[in-house]
Length: 399
Image 1 (cartoon, rainbow, N blue to C red):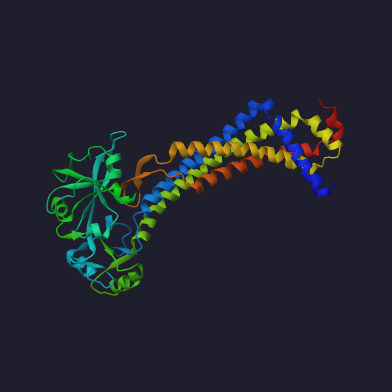
Image 2: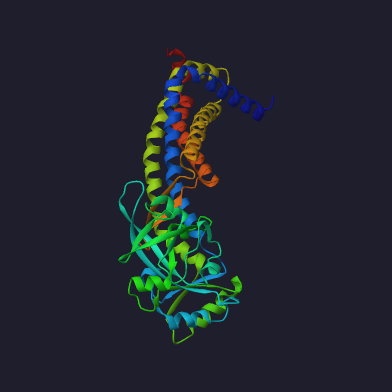
C-alpha cells in the first residue's frame, strides 16, 4: 500500500478502536457530552433572545418609508413638532399620495404603566397616537380581533404581542389613559414587528388626554419608491423652516436595537466562555482517561508501525465526535425549549417594553455546534499529544 493510504488506514483503525471502547468509559463520556450540550444550549438560548429582539425591531422597517424626528433626537421620546411642521413634511417631494392626501402619519408617543401577566409588576408600554394615514404608512398592520378604534373617540387597539405579555388588554377591557378609562376595542398584528408591542389610538384624542396641544413627536412618510428617499431627505434638510433628522424607517429601528442586542450578545458569550472552560476540562478528563486505559494498546500499535501523527489525529477525531454529539443534543434542546418563546424586555433607547419571540435560527444552531467542536478539539489535543509522545518501551510495561 502507498504511504498516504496506509496512514489514513491507520487513523481510521485507531479512531474505530477508540470509539468502540466508549462503553467502558460511559460515565466520563456521558459527563463530557452533556457538559458540552449544556454549553451549547445556554449559548444558543441566550443568543436567540438577541435574534428575536432584533427581528422584532427590524421587521418594522420598510425601505420605502422614512422616519422624521427633530434634529438631534435619537428617538421619539425626545423629539417634537408643531402641526404646521408636520404638514410641511407631508407636502415634501417624494411622499406618496392616495385619494385622501399625502401618506404621512404625524404621531404622538407616550408611555403608560401596564402590569405584566407573568408577575404583575408595572411595565412601560408605548401608547402611540396616529393619524388617518397611519394604516397606509404602516401597511403591515392588520386588525385580527375586534375592530378599529373610531376617530375622535377615547378608544384603543393593542398589538398582539402586548396583549399576550401584559394584563388587562383583552378586547372589552379598558386601560387608564390620563385620568380616564379607555376601552380596548381591537387587537392588531404587524408581521412580528415592534408595533405589536404598542397600543394605538387617535393622535388628537391622545393630545387632549395629555394636554399636548397640537404637537407631535415624529412623522412617518410612505415614499413613492425607495429611490425617492434622497430627494425627500434633501428637501427637508434644505428647508430653513425645519430642523429635522431624516432616516429610513428600517435604519431607525436597526439603530434602536443595537444597544440591547450588543448587551445580550456580550453577556451570552461571557456565560458561554465560562461554561466552555468547564466543558474543556471535562473533555480533557475524558480523553486523558481514554489514553490511560489504552496505554498498552496504543504502545503496541506504535510498535507495529502506527505513526505518532496517526495516533494524535485518531484521538482528536474521537474527542471531536463526542463533542459533536453533545453539540447536536444541546442545539436540539435549545431549539425545542426556546424557539418561539414569547417575552418582553426593556428597549433602553425608548425606555419602553418590547414584546418579542425568541428566534433559534439555523445560523445560531451552526454557531453552537461549531462552539462544541472547538471545545472538543481543545479537550482532545493535549491527551492526544501525550499518547503520541509516550516512550514505547515504558508504555508496554504499564498495567
